Length: 217
Image (cartoon, rainbow, N blue to C red; front, side, top):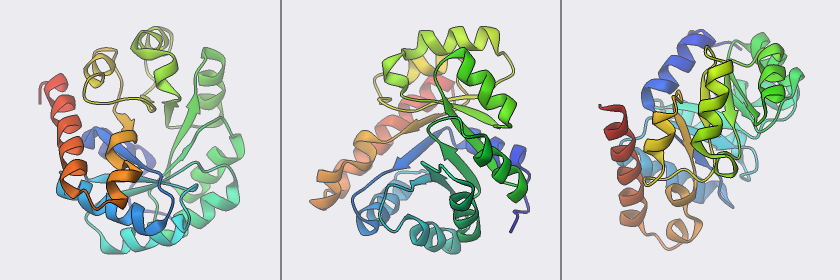
């Protein structure tokens, strides 16, 4: 099953959204709730991680609903790529360099974001066919690291994920990232479990506003 969009077009759409909520919850119900509230906060794309129970079913459900660009995260095998693409995922994210995952993404016509941290890993990911590089965990290296990587890989799109919030996102934008991934407060397990919709909406809006302000949008 392939998409009507090319991987480059999918990636362009992802970049246009700017902030990618990384949905990682202890149940599909909690993840669904987080997505519902974040859509209210203005988010148009969601990375549903495979570590969330029932992830493939949730991807299928959200893709069928339409109105949002749905991707799959923590994808580590070609079989998982096939499963999530069949369910409707338009982009696939891996936390590390897995050449067979990149090859499977090419076969299925979806965008591939591959995790890397060092120059060697970035080169390996690009060589494997990744469309963009997920810098993970970004909080351990910070914006200066990404700026340095940009200087030697100027054509690469970097998507830092891990520890990014409204107080730090501007420094990542200044470093030249394509967009950012964010979990943390956006999908806070306690807030979702407690039904604190306003808490999630506030965190979501605060991050999006900080990102747009940094982009001058």
